[in-house]
Length: 332
Image 1 (cartoon, rainbow, N blue to C red):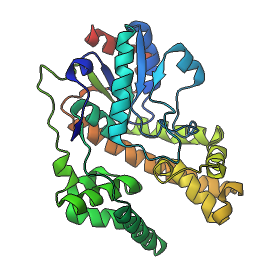
Image 2 (spheres, helix red, strand yellow):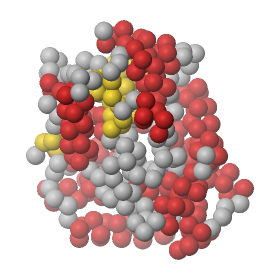
Image 3 (cartoon, rainbow, N blue to C red):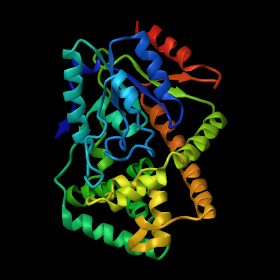
């Protein structure tokens, strides 16, 4: 079964994608002044979670009051939230925005969400708890022995294309891909092969910001440092101490996974009550920065390979207003 937003809705939307830390939020603010009225829909798989604010660089309350935002804080961190769930919520939000006479603008960096919105998504067979529990148990046993890539190796055998698309830390999607193969005998990547809509039906305004690598790496490194300064570690402590602690999916988010690992390394079951030394924090920051730079590279691959996406090459010298002006001119 395919979950999809009608093309007549998609063609009225604008999409602004790009790697993490490229400055999408600032460009969106400038774009709102040029294409008003607009409303923003988040294209970020971690911003859907309540209480995960610092590590996701979620838009501020002030910005959300100025420009209506959607698809933020729609799930608790202990919940699993599927791509099909996201598409259903996005369709409902778009319909409401259009009814109000505004224009939907999708903004974010989750390539899987973007492709699924543009092409629809295969929902697949229902979840099988026994398969999921077995795979997670075997993955945990392998990790305890130092093999943190067991799920990747298993998926490579049955569905190498899906393996290449997924992050080693994204246990939920790795397990789902293996599960689908076990249940259907066909690779998930094969079943998910959705072709783009015909040219006269697909949205015309799908853009992604493509910056110079060194420029982006500097911004990523600084963003991670700012997240620590703004309280990411305390945010993770609160999530761990909650009556409904952060679940497997949410804890795979960049930054969250590394902080959880650092706290658990010194505190075990009492991780949320532990403190980290300056040296431990420095080492953790370095890991987050490295993994985020690697993630940005994968984001580039996602957007470059989506034929619906129009690349906007940046030099690093443009202001958000200049970038927004160029986009607004194309839209007009």
